[in-house]
Length: 288
Image (cartoon, rainbow, N blue to C red):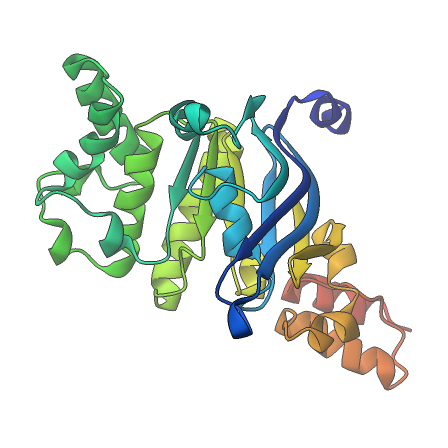
């Protein structure tokens, strides 16, 4: 039944033959960052996007928030054509974006004022802003820090405040462009816990760009990008069966997945696509 309900969900992202280029290639020629990308994402999905630097993943993310407009093709956000400049504001009401460096998103000297910035710009009533700020900070477990100065927070706390600022705008979709890249393991864990809760408890659609494979396995689905194209689109277990392919394009796989792959190559009767330690232990215990 759960699978059936997911299939019935509306499309929140639909990209059709999306193309983008920069005019800064060698000798001034066009350098394509997206080459005919097609992708559909349903409401409530947790999509992970993988790819090495220059694969097009961040460029693609910026099209979802209308930070960039394509050279060709279309992208629709909640049914709105994001390639039409007049629709930019409506797109950004529905699709919030969190960047790698939380300091770049801090605009105020007090946490609660920073979180209020987005809804204020949307023209939300002051009483509703107060409620949204408090609710958003509670959702990311930062309510007790509402009177603090952002620059005194840890990296993980700053990123959670940045996420709260997006939540306060009440988007249907949150795009996170390597939000844990600058954090230590503890900060990454804090942020991932917050992201999962937003998806699982509140039904917010998540597009999570990362280069940490242990984060990638937490998604419902993974797309892998290479040279501006999507080359794999599948559930995590199937994606990480492609160990040789992923390594050939400069990506890692979860350590336990790579270990299982190496053991299989040595003749051990394990299945490809083991994603975590618990699955590895279970698989080894079942060996005869």
